[in-house]
Length: 315
Ligand code: SF4
Image 1 (spheres, helix red, strand yellow):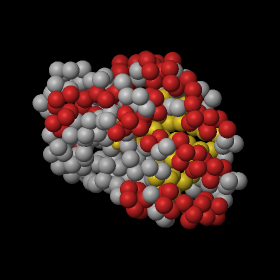
Image 2: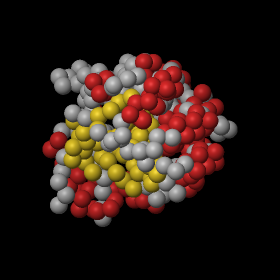
Image 3: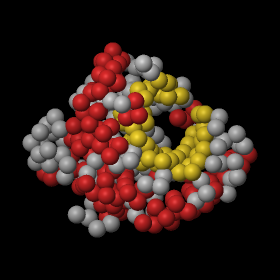
Image 4: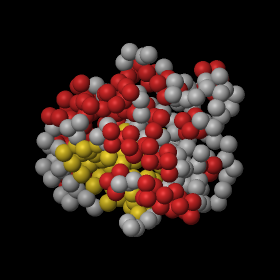
């Protein structure tokens, strides 16, 4: 086990040869989106199972190009008034807080995003002025990359700057790092988030119940004073099954994390093999609705034109 979270990030598997060797597999080859798998995540992959749902998420694409798939399906660039800022909705602003992720998910819609042009720390003065000037904004979302790949010191700096903008009430943090490297949830991080006057919402990204380790369950207790939510992506071969999604909701709830969104795949080139038809998605969702209490049911949504649109209306 790695001793600190940044050592874990550094020691991740980063080449196809290393992945094949460490996972006793032959299926990895270099693809468009470079391989990055933390050892903590690799340890949960079932050796010898080419269909393991955790393996499939990090296995470079074998997809054939398909119509309707593109490099930037959500057109983030179109909604970027300045480097590091995506402003799609009137009341909330998304900041590209980090250019780095702890894991490379091969279905990621931002895999082709030009992060170097969107480094908020290099552009913080103008961003601060933008937030001050936009008095209709009440929520800042830290996304990336993954904001929790930043040091606690940098996170504290960002939190303090956002705090200084009086009309901002909520800070939302989107992270997959905390799940794939649970020791990222440090005491210092939890103190920073408890001290702030902002209402903090942590949105994890977990797709399969096996991603939730005993270690994560233990570490996440440090964040119990925040609002904890989860979003998943509906992925063929990974979680396209009401039993798997139901088990995920129960496991999240047991850790005081509420299922929030179940996203349909964003059609990014290279992720074609993860696509599920709308008909199949609705079928799975209806079964999930029948199996789960309402509060355990994530909303099935598609990101479209800058909004998450619900695909199925509540019964
Ligand atoms: S952690 Fe999030 S941003 Fe990073 S590769 Fe995975 S889905 Fe994309």
